[in-house]
Amino acid sequence: MVGRKKELKILKDLLESGESEFAVLYGRRRIGKTYLVNEALGKHFAFHHAGLREGNVRKQLDAFRLALRQQGHFDCPRLKDWLEAFFELENLLARSEKSRKVVFLDEMPWMDTPKSGFLTALESFWNGWACLRKDIVLVACGSATSWMVKNVVRNSGGLYNRVRTRIRLLPFTLGECLEYANAERHLGYSRRDVAECYMALGGVAYYWSVLEKGKSPAQNIDALFFGEQEGLKGEYDELYRSIFRHPDPYWKIVEALGGRRDGLARDELLEQLDCTSNGTFSRCLSDLEECGFIRRYHPSADGKNGGIYQLVDNFTLFFRRFVLGRDERGGDYWQSVLAEGAKNEWRGFAFERLCLCHIPQIKAALGISGVHVEAYSWRGTAHGGKSAQIDLLLERRDGVVNVCEMKFSQKPYAIDKEESKRLAGRMETFRDRCGRDCSIHLTMITSNGLEHNMYSHAVQSEVTLDDLFRPN
Image (cartoon, rainbow, N blue to C red; front, side, top):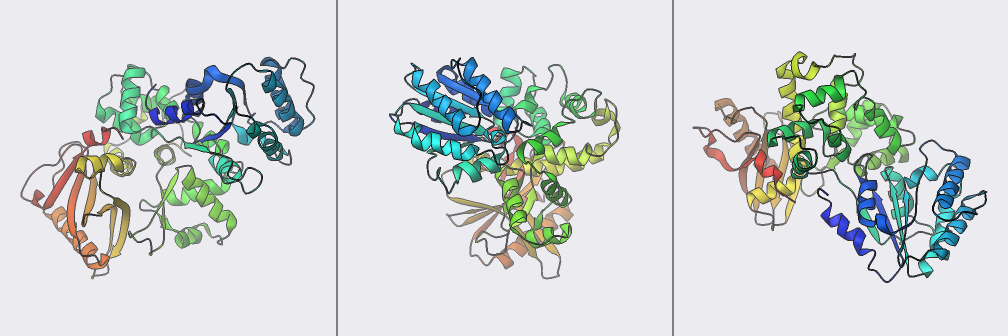
């Protein structure tokens, strides 16, 4: 199994506990949650069931009953409500001879249909029966991250503080995608090939599983997004609908943020959407952040200058930029039709996002893994009134700030005279405005190395694409 070593150990350790355990596993659709639980605990399942995507309470209960009957409770009656459903689950578990009885409830948010009483019944099952025993391992799983966090992890009612194990399953890193692409899928991809795919797909396991052997990254992108087959063309809609029951307000926020490379402050976002600040808006932002679609950063390390929201999900950005709302392009759009300039412009932006997903690897390359670091972005205004933006600053406890410039290029990146002036001006503006007495190091993070010339002397450190493939 590629990656997930830490998560596998956490789940397997649940089997060694002398108490009943309540664990929650969540993460976006297609990230590999079900596969991970099956790998870690599948041999120990006493009961497992997945909620129905579109089922009402009657259909959910009927499906739950079928699962009970299929897994040993042959005389299970028709269930009238969730309280009775969990009572029948108790009967099944009480008869189980397994020393540790693992209950895996997959896609739990789908079971909680409106006015179904699901959460009340879950509370009764855990508080009134399971936690009083020593042999139950309940694993709750769901793609609707916001539901899982709000209703289970941060439950303020009967499930308050009941979850002892919480796993947020994150996308694969570049290094893990390289291992998966070549060791598992046998694609024969170079690191540049993997980076090209990562900038379009992110680290979502399922998206990598549908790449075809014998095709270049460009051919696979064409097949998945622009070919005659469905591929991933329907995934964008399914992704948001599977996570959010009412996706429209989320799509509006994503659309607004997708138009600004450096992101928008909350007030700017409200103005662009022409809406007022309220609890619903705040919840949508929090949900999108928790699911990893957007990030909120402060344009200073102290966080006093307000948060900036930025769309960072690779798949969403690629889909909105090249696929959504466009006519069919034919099977060679990415390889032959789209101008190389447009692709390179996108790669420049996408490479920045790729770097932001691999800050631990950047720290390792700089030799500061053991140093406390505040990573943030910065906005400022120079004396002439011109704005300045630095996408990544690493402020270290040892008194150094690494100003990171992230550049994608097909050849070693060359700093020319104009670029040298721009970099110097940006660093001077930051020094004047940040109000810190510290050393400022210019760090170049490049896709193909740095060309050393008369203007590269100001660069104190370099990080390359190869460095981003380091393990966590």
